[in-house]
Image (cartoon, rainbow, N blue to C red; front, side, top):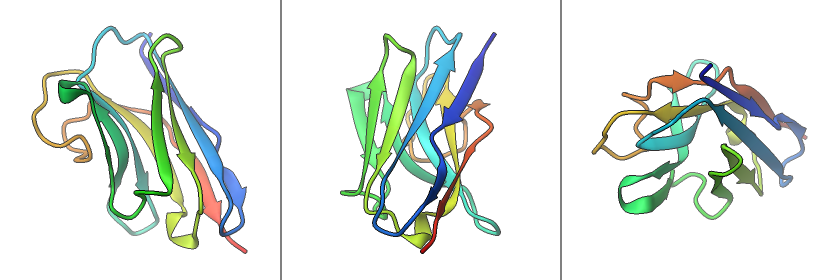
Amino acid sequence: QLQLVESGGGLVQPGGSLRLSCSASGFTQYSAIGWFRQAPGKEREGVACFARRGSSTNYADSVRGRFTFSRDAAKETVYLQMDKLNPDDTAVYYCALHTVNRNRPCLVSSGYNYWGQGTQVTVSA
């Protein structure tokens, strides 16, 4: 079965840290995998991603220097280390996978064909 499962969300104070995990099971190939987030009333936003073409890792400007994407192919798991969190980071965070050839930047959510259920991250004093 094909499945993406996120974990690691929770409530944290401003300036704190969280580490999100995404288990990607049953996938034999992909062109991009990444983290996205959506706050209530706002559009889905690309946070960090890895594109197989060029083996590049990309970050949204709003999180660059604070968040770190990593990947463990053997464990079929990707991670998002989030440091220096602020209330603007509050959102549901999703892991997504793109299984076909892709040329657009991996932070663009359109075209991703598998999505996890999401994990809530709340940053509040």
